[in-house]
Length: 276
Image (tube, rainbow, N blue to C red; front, side):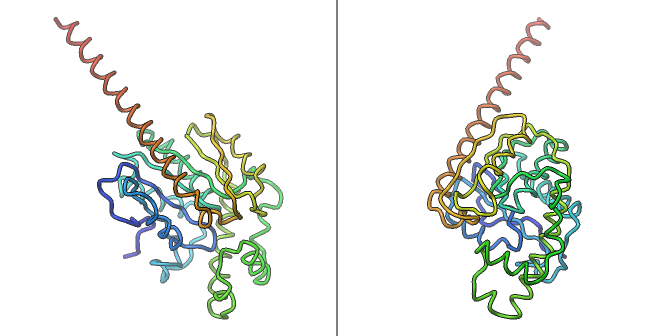
């Protein structure tokens, strides 16, 4: 039986908030598991593991975008994420595109879920933009240079021929997936969203990150940390900031639930008075 697409990083059944990390291209759940252990106990963390890496190493790569999105949404439903606790979807780079598309599907198919979105280190790309498919035809040397530019892969891994071949294969698959995601329509969502990036990210300038605002009907917040494309793992300010956003979501959800409960009580009282 295949390993789950989403799995709990730490079992915290008493947690107030559920958080899902959707990882970057060429990556795995591993660095996000490390982040999970730094977060406070009121957050229960789940991590994405795409096929062909980590616990799913033996599975063939999956570049079909609809299959990947369906698998993630099915896992969210199976795990009951966002059913009884508010959910924070945190997508980094490739994961940001996945998170947006998952949010679109949740808003349409499960409107009762309480969730918000974090788009990290990914600029907004208009579907059909010329050049968005360029990464699908990169040579091994091009992909290797791309990995070196992102500085997210240890140099000793890239120096080893076998590991280098494997990492290039992972990245090639994920770049194809990313290109397919970029071509999908971007309907406007009514979802609370945070745009997050690094001020030294040469691949994703702040101005391109900010373009995501056009994809939402509600105002979005933006936070820029010190760091490059992988600021998420290098800035000491990230963990406190995520915890603050999680607390805000918990408080907002509590207020909405309380308001709904009071509304139900008033309706019941009015019905009772009418009967009398």
